[in-house]
Length: 367
Ligand code: SF4
Image (cartoon, rainbow, N blue to C red; front, side, top):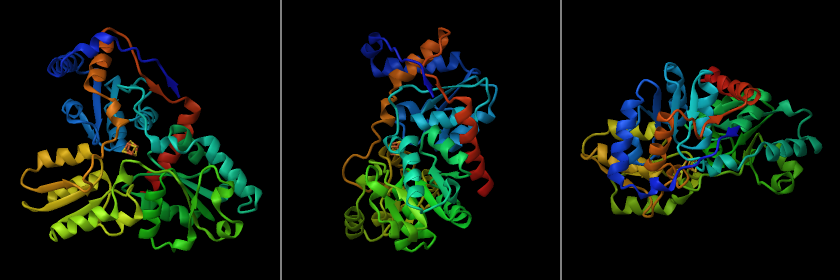
C-alpha cells in the first residue's frame, strides 16, 4: 500500500457550504469523462448527491472497474474499499480517497502480523498440521494485506450478503475455519447455518491461544476473530424490545454486523442492499426500525416519505471515520486533478493485489 500525502490548504476551510457544493458541481462537469465518483451508502448526503455510482463496497469496485474509460475513481468511502477498487481496476485507473484518515476501525483490528501469529500458535499446539488445514474467510471489510493472506491459503472473501454461503463452503472444505475480522458477521452466519454454539469459538486478540484451551480449540469448527464495528455495536436488544412495546406493527431490520443478541430477535437481517430493498418493496405506511449506519437510514427516510422509518437506537449511529470525507475534501481533490496533480492515491502493490484478487475470485466462484 502506498499513500501520497494530503496537503489541503487552509483557504478551503474558509469556504461556505453552498460555495463548496457549487464548486464541486462545476469541477465534476469540467472533468466529466475522466472520472467517476463512487459513494458508499454510509456517506453523508452532501457527498452522495455527486455520486456517479452508489452501493456497497464490492458493488462499487466491480462497477467502477467495468467503466474502464474513466481514469480516476474517487472513492467516497473508507480505505479498504479504495484498496478493493484498486485491486479490481484496470492498470491505467487510479483510485483516490478524499481524506486519507477515512479508515475502518474494524478492518484495522486484524493485521497480518496478528493473524499470522494466531496461525503459528494453532500449529504449535497441534490444532492443525499445516496452515492450509485452517481455511480462512475474511469479510470484505478488511485490508488488502489480509485478503492477500487469505488468498495465499486458498481462502475466500465474503460480504454481508453472502457470509452464510461462503462460510458453508469453508466448513465443507477445511478442517477448521478462521473468520476475520468481524466476530458478529461470522457468528450470525454460523448460527444461520445451524453450527452448534460449542463449535464456534472466539479468538481474543492479545491472549495466548486467543483465550481458549487446547481442548476447546480441538472441538471448534469455526474460530471468530474478535473484531467488531463500533457503529453496529451501538444497537442493543433493549432497543428492539422498546420499539415492539411502542408499536407492535413495526418491523425490525438489522445489519449482520450487529450482535447475535440483536440479529436473533430482529424480523429480518441483511446487508445494506437487503435493507434498502426491503424498505423499497414494502407497502406504503410500512413501519421500520433499522439497525445500521445513520446516514443510510436518513436517506431512506427522505426517499420513502410514505413509510414510517426510524433508526433503531435513540442515539446517533454515524460512522465517524467514513465522515472524514467531507465535501471540502472532495472539492480539494477535484481542484488538484483539474490542476494536473494526483493526490491521495490508494494503490496496492502487485504482489499483494494478486493474492488478494485470488480471495475475491474464490468468493465469486462460490457465489
Ligand atoms: S460502519 Fe463500521 S464497518 Fe463500516 S466503515 Fe464504519 S467502522 Fe467500518
